[in-house]
Length: 217
Image (tube, rainbow, N blue to C red; front, side, top):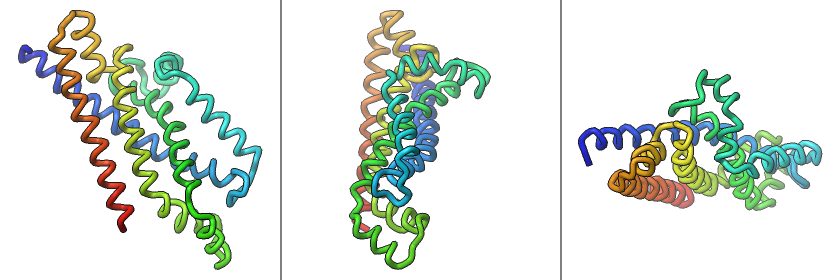
């Protein structure tokens, strides 16, 4: 591999990491409240409301049912409105975050539903309000699962960011398509695979260790 391609590989790696972390952070900030809302408004929840739960569930399912490559193209007008362009690394963060938010919301919902109902009833018996239940029971008790779910979301975003390279989003996916596939540079394609493998393994390993440390506390 030439020095120029090696520099492109490093630049593309940074772009992939930036896309993954930025869209991951947005999905966590937006997805966790959405997951809490789905659990709280469900039947028997602390703020039971079938209508709101049905609407939220339908919106989440609608976004999750659309393949990412289609969502990527469909959101081009929204991306232009927010970022000013539909091309480049920062433009890709918009569809990545929008796709990852409902995905993480469902993962968070699963973790939150596993909490012992008796803990919630105990806080209620002591006069705790809804916010107290969320702050003192739901989030702390589900935290290991929430961290593990967020790790899975980040790994998924690495793959999605590579797919975003198909429309010029930059990153390792763009490098693999433009040089590895279109120019038949097998070395570039293999280099992208070699870089992506430890990146994904590193994210998964770090997330698993962090979740295990939280669970031991």
